[in-house]
Image (cartoon, rainbow, N blue to C red; front, side, top):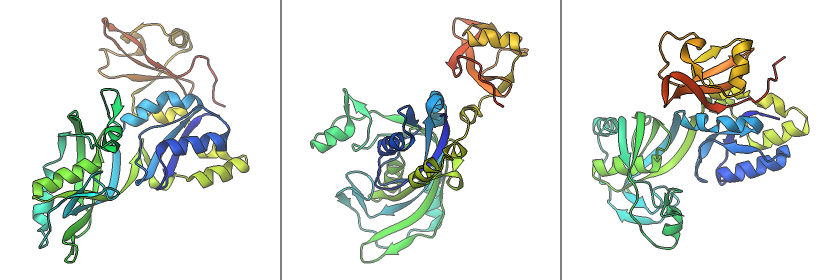
Length: 311
């Protein structure tokens, strides 16, 4: 069994929990996920099964889209609704939409973030959340993130009793973005302590919510011997690379992992990005420019070691 499964992760489960449960449902060990989701977050979690685990990194590199809620008025230890309150800045009136929207727009493009203490980033061999649980603080590395879209999608809601202001948002971002931190940093720019009070990932690895299936649906499909119908082929995971169809003669060289001059693939100049090599509708390998010789392309990732043609 092999393929890519667009799983809908429910709240209360870690991404590892989902992999563990799928291993029991599908009776196989070679399963991996592309992009961790926090337990309090639900949404799309692409799962790679069997040989498809080789394309995990390519699905992880693809952009993601989230919908969630930002709340001004207080911040938390975890930067989301599950943490303890650490700072209070009561909101006394509704902020204008223009102010909120224009401030959100300042985050478009490449930004820097400091990961939350409750995150899986390693510092000196330990996860940040391990330090946080022990009451320790350490200097956290500054990271770059790419924000493609960050917009308000509802009217702000003012709670006069709690002195908070909340609104829902949508963000399209690159890998490694901490949406919790984005909410906190937005609050700081607006002059308030803030946290991310809700979050759902609605797109990841090219999958949307409408394509997703739950663990229960996978279990039912397995019981009915129909689980293959839920899986997309390994080729789905490399669809963002330029596709090059090659001859049988060139296929033999590719299958042996040989370095090959770029012009043998039909290029007039050396390609500036990796390419996906296909033979009879099957992706064989991802090739890229050799760092030691710009005229040669070499394997970046071998996806098939033997030809198993599709029917």
